Image (cartoon, rainbow, N blue to C red; front, side, top):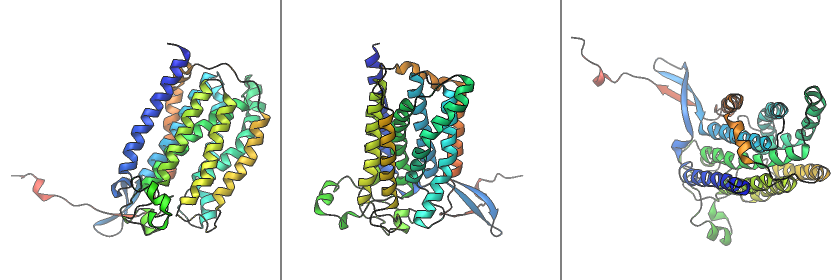
Length: 358
C-alpha cells in the first residue's frame, strides 16, 4: 500500500469513529441517566440507608479523552522515531501538574469547590511544555544519548490536544456544565441556525438545570460545536503531520483550538468568573502570545512524510498498553468522583425471590 494511502485511511478511520461517537453522544448524553456511571456505598447514615460516592460519566469521558489524546501523541511521535522514554517523562510531568491545576484554577476563577477546568489545565501544560523538553534533553537526553525535537513535539502535542479537547467536551454534555445560552435569549440568526441542532438538558442534577435553571429549554450546543471544531482540527493536523508538515500542523491546530475558545465563550451561559471577557479567554490569548513566538523560533525545514504503519506499532507494546490503562485509571479516579452530587442508598431483600427452606 502506498505511503499516502496509509495516512489517508488512518485519518478516514479516525474521522468515521468520531462521527459515530458524536452522533450517539449528542443525542443521548444530555439525558439524566447519562450523568452517574456508578454509586459506591461508603458508610451508613441510619439503620437502612447508606451514603454513596458517585462515579460520573464526566470522569469516564475526561479519562477517555486524556487516553485517546495520549495514544495519538505516541503514534505520531513514534512515526518519527522519537525516544519514547523521554516522551513518557514529559507526559508524566505534564499530567502530574495539569490534573491539580485543573481544579485549582477553576476554584480561583469560579470561587467554588468541586469544579474543574480543561482550559486552565491546558494553559499550564502549554506554559511548561517547552521547558520540560529542554530539561529532558539536558538530563535524560544526555545520559541516554537522545534528543527530543521541540518542533516535532509541539506539532504532535498540539494535534493530540485538539482531539483531547474535542472528546473531553462529551464530559461536559454528560454533566451539563459549560452549557450554552438559551436560544430564546439569542439573536434571530442564532435561533435560526440552531432551531433543529440544539441541546436540551434534563434532570435536577445536571449543572445546566441546578445552576442555570434551564431544564427542558433549548440551548446553543456549544459543547457539541467545540467537539466538532477541535476534532476536525485534529484530523487535519494529523494529516499534515503524517505528510511531514510539522509546523503547519502545530500552527493550525493551536490557533484553531485557542481561537475557538476565545470565540465560543460568547455563546456560553455558565458562570466563569462574572466578567464580560472571561479569565479563560484571557488565558487563551496569553497562550497564543506565548506559544506562537516559540513555534516561530523552532521553524526549520520539515522532514519527509512519515509512515503511520510504524507509528501504530507502538500501541501493541505491553508497556504502552499498561501505561495507557494506568493513565485512564488515574484520571478517572481524580475527575470521576463527584463532590457536587451526593447519593443515598437503601438495600433490601426481595422476599418473593427467596426459596423455601422446607
